[in-house]
Amino acid sequence: MQMEIEKQAMHNAMHNQMKMEMQVQMEQMKQQMMDQMKQQQQLAWQHMLAAQSQIAQFAQVAQFSQQVAQVPLQGAPMPPMPFAPNHQAGVPSGVPQYPQPAAPPPGGALAMARDQGGSLQLQEAFKTMTAKEMHAVIEELTPHLNQLITHPFGNYIASKLVALPAAQAAMADAISGRVVELMQDARASRVVQAAFEVLPEPTVKALIDELRTHVVETAMTTNGSWSVVSAFKRTRSSFIVEEVAPCLAAVSSHQHGTRVVQRMLPEAAAQGVELQVIFDALMHDVDLMALASHLFGNYVVQHALRAATAAQRSALIEKLLPSLPVISTSRGGSNVAETILHTASAEQLVCAEKLLRGQNLEAHNFGRHVMSTLSKVAAH
Image 1 (tube, helix red, strand yellow):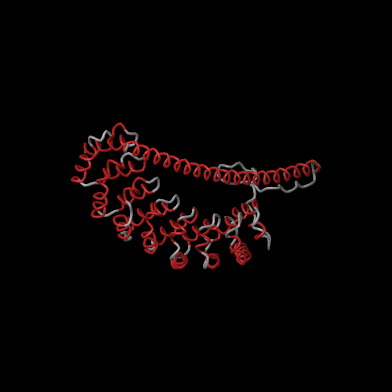
Image 2 (tube, rainbow, N blue to C red; image 1 turned 135 degrees about the vertical axis):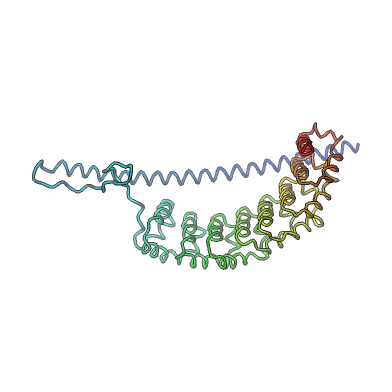
């Protein structure tokens, strides 16, 4: 009877895990399809703009041909060519040079920024604008940056402006005071992440300081999680680590929150940021076996084993070793088990081998991978 109950419990657990995996895969496929649609839409606009430019050139050439036809054979000068000869290396003279995207007319930048095609044109025009033209555009857009940051097309312009030294002060002012809100917005998060990358360090630290007491709630959202990752990568602020630690199990087991912990651990380890509060939580506040077997949490445990100091790693492995045969039979847990085998000390590896041998794991879907890793590690 007990065996039947255990089998049913294992069946239910596997069913729930498969269901969660399917949901994650569906979400990822949905996101990929949306990204592809956006890229195709932008390409379509770029092709349309190029076609419009070509049509305008063909019209000029046709007009030139008509003018030539009306010129007598002798006694009259030829009309000017509608395009300058191309003297670039490798390009035959006389090949039309398509005009670079022009700067917007005075007072026209805002309308372009709010239009899908206009936004694309304006982004291209930034590459060739003179300092005077750029100043005029920044001056026109500055009073409207608060709205452009969250606008469907204007947010792309705001992302470009944040990289321009002349616009950085205005962009910082537009973001300041609502960093937490913008980090979680699908459009504005793109602007905020760009700002974290390029604004001066004191400015970035002041902006990220608004995240205090809001790290966990922000990390649990799709766009907020990426923004927290960006914030930590730029400043490696210790308060982000300290706010995640008390909620480590919940954050690590969350579809979006786990991204923050997974990116934070190796970054912190590489840069010498203190992670003891995270390892204290893993050792004393978290059901480590459950987290190691979790669909998302197992990745956090793997990163923790790799990011740990020798002492921290040894303590984690000692706590996980008694559960090694059990976690080896789940998809997530088997990944952790393999990481344990790769990072364990010689004494721990001997203990792991004793625990795993005789469990018939070779016949298990996931356990066989663990046993294969054990054989390879033991051979070396």
